[in-house]
Length: 390
Ligand code: SF4
Image (tube, rainbow, N blue to C red; front, side, top):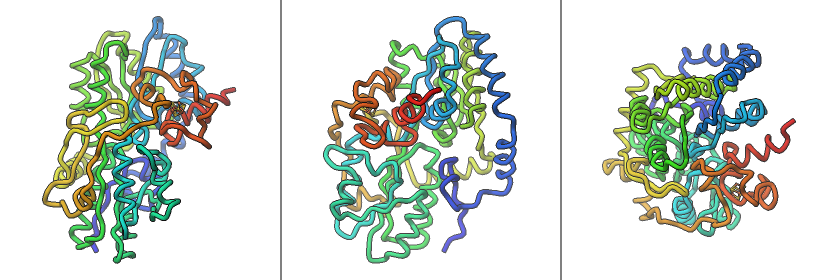
C-alpha cells in the first residue's frame, strides 16, 4: 500500500473521507462564521450603483449558478445585468459519444463500472449507464477515484473501470490514483479519461461575437492545471475580464462586482480569488503528477464540437490503466436528443426558460437533457429555485 496524499477538489472534499492538510481547515471554518448576508447586501448595492447600461456576463460554473439561484439574488441584481450560464458543468458538457463509450465498456463481461451519481442518468445515443445497469451491468456509485481503487482491491476477479469525468481540478486526484494502482500492481483497475480544460472552450465561445460576453466568472472547481496565465491569455485576446472565485454567495457577488468594475473601466484584468487555492509547492506537485500521467489532446464537448487541447489522454507508459485501450473503445460522435436545448444553454445563447420543455415534459423527475439531471445543471437549478422564487 502507498501512503500517497491524494489531491481533492472542493467537490470531492464534500463527499470524501480523505483528510485535508491541517492548514486548510481553519479557512473553511472561518468562512462559515462570516456575516455573509450583510456583506451580500453591500455587494448588491455596489453592483447596482455601477450598472448603468446593459452588461452581459457568463457565469460558467454550475455550482456558482446554483448559489445565485438558491439565494434568490438574480431578481435583486440590476435588470440590465444579464447573467448567462456557460460550459462549467462536467455532466452537462459530456457528449453522447463519450457516454456511448462508457456504456460499451460497462457492458463487457467481468467489468464493474465506478461512476459518480450525476452521470448515471445521462443518455448517450441510446443507453445510459443507468439503463444498462437495470439490464444487469454492474455499476457502482462512488464519490472519489480512490473508492474505485478500493473496489478493485476487494474484487480481484473483476476489472474495475473508473469513469473520470470532470474538469481539470479532478485531474491530480485521478492521476494520483492511476500512479497508486501502478505502484501497487493493481492491474484490474483502469480509467476512462473524460476530463476537460475550460479555457480553450471559453476561447472557442468568445470567437462568436454575437454572444457579447463582457466578463467571465468561473470557479476553482474548473481550474488547477490552467493557471491564471490561461485566463490572462483569454483576457488579452478577447478583452475579457475573468474572475476565478469560490462558491459562497459572497464569493460569487464579489466576482460579479469585480467584473462589472472592469467592464465599466474598459479594462480586462484577471482576478484569482480561489477559496481553495493550493500552496505553490502543492500546485507544482499536482502539475508534475498530472503531466506524468496525462497529456492534453483535442476532445469533444456537447454542442460545442471538438476543441484542441481541451481534454486528456493517459500516456503510453500507463496504457494498461487506460480503459479505452484495454477494451479497444473509441469516442465517437454519438447522437444527442435533438429536442433538448442544453447545447444553446451551456454556450450562453439561451436560458432554461427559453426551452419549451422546461418544467413541462422536462423536470428533475423526468429529465430530457443533462442540464436537468445534474445538481449543477442550470436547468435543474432553475427548476428547483427559480420556479419557487419568492
Ligand atoms: Fe434540455 Fe430539459 Fe434543459 Fe430543455 S429544460 S434544455 S430539454 S434539460
